[in-house]
Image (cartoon, rainbow, N blue to C red; front, side):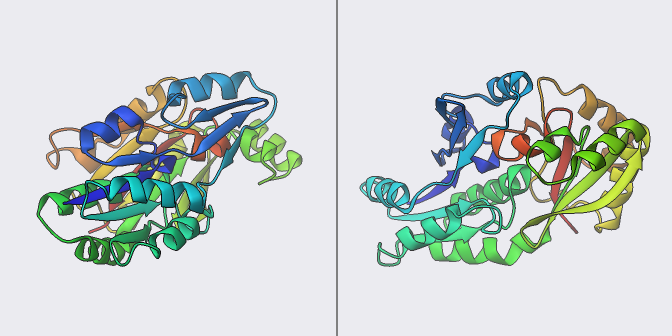
Length: 281
């Protein structure tokens, strides 16, 4: 039996991980003196409630080599092999720690760098679950994931620049000007790193730009996992985007999978962001 192991950067909480049959290893999130296990004792909604009320950004910590090694040893008591999928190695040291720990288990553990995060990492995990169910070995699953992960497109429209400013990603002046002009940046994860790919003035133009960029990526492969995500306490902004982008989905899928964004990316984008992740055709 092959077991899929994931970190919480994919924003798959413990209950959903159990339903998928995957093992969740949570990152730690700290608000001041309080520390939580992401997706275990801190829900995505609870995270944003605290984020909105806080004057400072929370801190997230990578999963250590020791933690991975301990988890692998525990899981291999019942599983034959493991495939571990982590957040991009260019965004966190979590993958390097997992890969080092995996090397200690004589070819029974394979670590895969998703080169992604959030719902971009999620769709790769969902593909891995599909492959595991088909009876492939851990080596075969890891090889297929590495071969396909470059096709994943993650695009996100941000509602505010405030949290990028708090995190030191942009200057206070740029954040102020963006707020005055109602600039909505669109970001993507490219080669494992977050990149700015467009800017629009106002939410409507931002939605239009997001639709254009999805099409520009080559279209959505609806035979593979895909996902829509939102940050904050409700999906109102995402629902408006879905309505505005109806031609992307109409007649191609029976349902749109919508998920809340959690702490790893939510810390930097804040509430009101929307995102789409898919394998390009």
